[in-house]
Length: 121
Length: 108
Image (cartoon, rainbow over the protein chains, first blue to last red):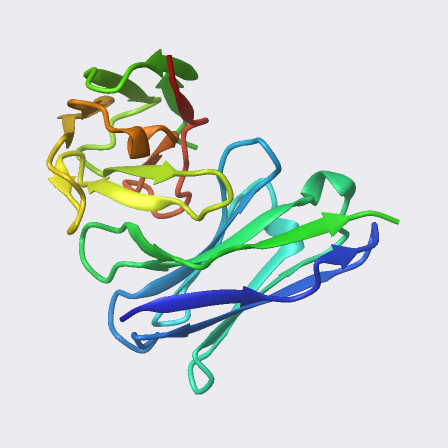
């Protein structure tokens, strides 16, 4: 059974750096083709894909946020970490991590429960 | 970047109705189109992958079709638990996993 869970601060100040951790179980990020992605959703708005890291440490970032995002993995801890610099109130959102299938389907088939991050002074 | 446009943005329907939601890609994405359902306060749930394949455990009243740039999600015989927001997402370009803006399905 695949599970994912996001953890990190729920309140950050403007200009600070946000660090979120996705802790997962039920799969290995050393399995060929597997990835873990981050997606966010501002209150009342649509989903926005942020970044993804693959089993081979290849990384993808949303071009509009690329300079602010860093994604890393720790396979020994079954964790993926997302950092976002220079946080702004518009970054207030629920942040989800999700398992990306190893197959050609390339879907996000399992999601964490999400963590609401508020950016406010 | 590939843009995904859903229509309508909101939709009112009754239990038992058949509804269709459309998703259009700004360029061909072959069949790399996924549909998700999201209920308030919950994470999205995968319904359909590769445009028309039903995810395990999803009721057969949900179906998807299309290829290239135009896709549809159809829900036959709406059930009370189907009232939610639906998102399409392309996975053709693995440089950018774009979502549509969502379609909110409400009870009439």
